[in-house]
Image (cartoon, rainbow, N blue to C red; front, side, top):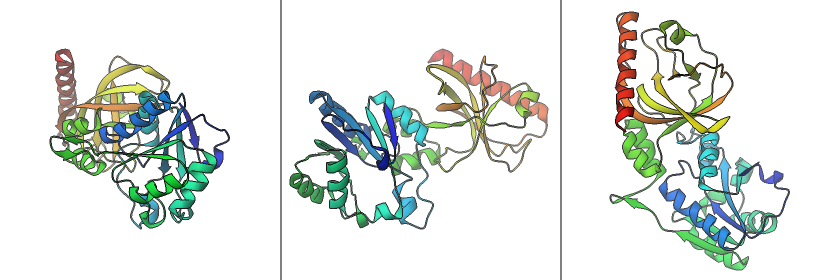
Length: 311
């Protein structure tokens, strides 16, 4: 999969482009239905499947708030879309100027003139252009005018709930990982670059890879059984336990993500990893002594390894 950052960096013509349009935060099963439809049509036309999305999230630009907590980082989005089989991923830089672009200008200048799109695929509630006036009905008018076929994909329901990023964020926030996973179609994940920690875990006998807390949707603070994938070797995975929280026993108030990777002893500072959350083990708590903390960590590992043996 080729990744292009910025419309201005599109410097080639693609054969029979079929484009999935959207913010696609979460790449959930509803999104996947839209994306797979574009991929299937591109294959049918012997063409190119393109996912066109935006960075940062439009709500961060058009409102005064920080926007929603993101389900996926850019790295996670790239990882998931490559697995789905997208040919080209385009991140358009969403600015105030871009938000003022009239829907017809976006359709003509970007989709028609730059990409020469054959077919567009969007979700049922997709809007675009200045003040979100580009509804799917208006998009249908414009697509007919510019000889582009529009495909509006119906919402996906699971157990009478429409699959949505908003609902998934709520599930993650509340720690309902299995409910979130059911709507996502894959485990809740956290990714980032491994940074230098204070080596406290190593002194306790449990060396950890440390990640920074960023503005994304996190589950409740606690300990989780996880699977770890390194960006440098995506075909291989490791298991371990992760603590996300404030480390009340040793580093009170300091927010962090720490992962103890089983049977692993390499220098991986600066490497990017993806962590899949597979099982909640316990909430974070403060221990009276370091010895009690060590005992509990050993028990966390025991619980997780026993679970792995049974699944």
